[in-house]
Image (cartoon, rainbow, N blue to C red; front, top):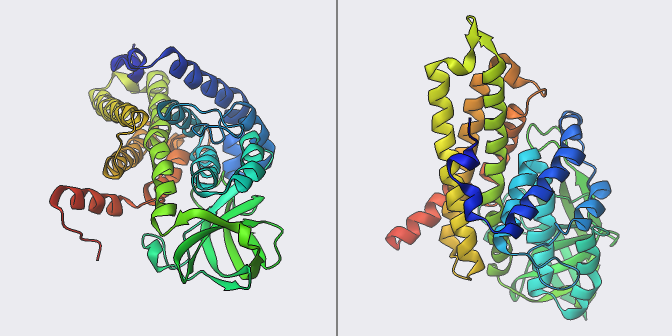
Length: 387
């Protein structure tokens, strides 16, 4: 028997450091996270504040950033870490992704030196958590329509509005909030204890249950002038952060798919149907072969995109291609694996339907499949079709 990694000789494409990081994160997931994740999912809880210092000690928070206590790894190494985290649960990868690729990247890329010194070392160590407030109740795929506004009042800014579907929102120490101003869209750092700022955790979710999701309300939130991210000007600033996070999804979604496939293969080899293992039937083998091919192709694409990013050559439409492919194939693999497990596949004794439910969100957030199709369509034809 061979694994998908062996089938596609994935290890031969990785450096020693990349394999070491992958294996370290895999061990952490197996020992610290996997024994509890089904319970977290069932209970709709996630111990973000408890886990953050442990993730920080491993160098996983803002790991692709340089300085300020960040690990300064390559993009490919970050992607491989995302793959292993999401093999446990999409909620774990989402927490790390929002902390590093969204909140910390916004501060690192657009913040003042004082803002970087204040927040990034704490966030890299997991002593402080951040969230990223862009999506609004009525504006997801069209963030340019945001209604949250920031108005100057002397040397201060006053913010009013709301944000929705904000990962880490109710446990964050600081929120990176994007608002419309007379100068265009700008970003602000909003400490969680600022008067007028409220974060309410969202419940009754059927996906990403092992993840903290919140709605943010800003009611006359007064901030000093130095809360503004000085280099974050226009909608391109938050969209640049989203591109970083999407890159992690390119790898991460495949981790969920790989975990589903491994569970399905193990189940098929041990489950007897009509006096022989389920794995010995042609239809089962056809399903497994097709899924292995799609997973392997996705991993090869992800690695290729990682190498492009490490060389500074990755374009936004290439990230869209990776995000579209990985999420679309991962959810198809998870659903197909569920058919192999039969009725057992709907229980939390196995990971497949938990992953499938999570991937429904991953397919949608940070650009729906349809949005990425339109990004690719524009790149291919030169014509915009968003409106």
